[in-house]
Image 1 (cartoon, rainbow, N blue to C red):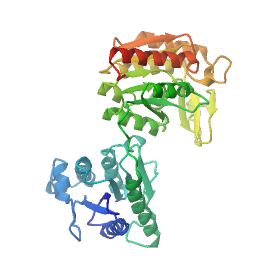
Image 2 (image 1 turned 180 degrees about the vertical axis):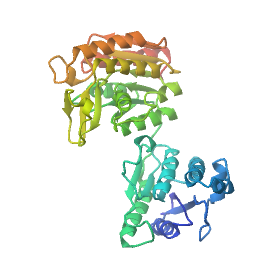
Image 3 (image 1 turned 90 degrees about the vertical axis):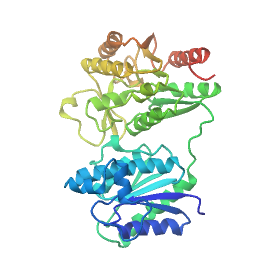
Length: 410
């Protein structure tokens, strides 16, 4: 098979042997390769398909200017910008089907920008000496990026690093051949949620929306799920969104590592996508379960969901701030926005008598939503819990109204 082409990117002046080995493996499996050099000081041992000069120019500069900075960080940011732009262009023209980038910290920094420039569904592999490191902030990770540790290969080839490099080369080519890219034959509704033990609305909503002719994608709002949701919303992939689990907004406000970044709950609004929003788990701060709770949160009621994830409840004042921030982010929406506010609670654990029940905090959030509600937001109060059938019925009523009005395709 010679039906898939992989972009192989890295500093070909210093990593020629490793990048050439990756190229050899891909070609030996029948794939094609486009080689991109992101070096600054040196030159590759053999000709490449995309030169460092082309990369620097695509980054709005030149190799001479990058060298003149006398700062390797500034120089590599020029190359990162250019590499990302060229990768996006190559994919848009159908010239590449996947990408693999090799590097240490410098190469990984560049790789994150390059991968983020490619759409969801394009195989993206980073072979790095710092794979899975806490140095890498979640907000810089493309939603479907794959990483493999470049073990024992910082300087030169050996049997240890060949095992990692060959796996990655085979993986990206196999992924490019096997990937079933997202279809666009039905209008897509994006929904955020958590598992059925805490939020249940998707159980009723998904089949009901499918009966109406929509495809439904439910995103697990635990950081990377929200990143994927925002990425697709920015691309205009959704006909509508049901952003019912805004917990990642609060996580980011409180400095949790379980974050979808500072722009959560903004992409759909910027793109003019119709939004139905709610308060699923709005009152919880998710924290990494295997780490000690921060000192200021240790006296809070908490739920240890598993060894990876622990949630603590917000104070009434923190819930008021959460409401203010949600309203602030929705205020800039260019499309219609409805906020469904179930006044009896936003997750299964906060029901009366439940382990995380806090009527005062719930009332504080609802009052703050009323106070901060911007003119473009339609606030619909429901005398129900978010897991009651009435909530799903209210969401479907909004959808059906939009369909009748021509806001959504019927």
